[in-house]
Image (cartoon, rainbow, N blue to C red; front, top):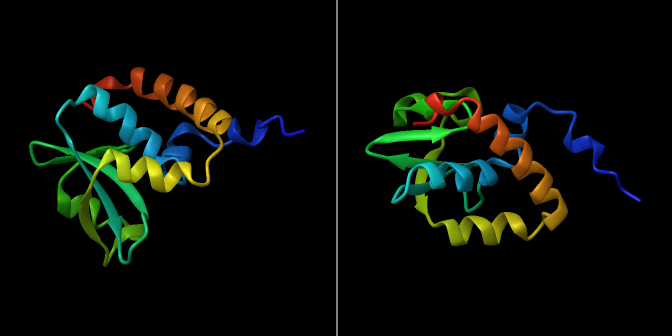
Length: 120
């Protein structure tokens, strides 16, 4: 039986930069009603997900311009494509167990709440 201990080993920032960026986007959208959602990609997949509010793009690392965001090594040469929270959740929840989502959400919520100035 899985005890999900592997979800407690990476830092919250690592979780938010890896497969759980969609949880970060969902949590940040609660801080920024009426935000827009974007995926960073070079194909049809979701390499990373961010929110945008008033021209500022926000992810687990904090606030960025479009240029700054697309200049991170892992996303160079990629583009931002607008999407919806529904598309994001459908994509990621297709391979994420609810219990995993709940554990990660709890960890990321605490992390974001303790650093709210980085996200607002």
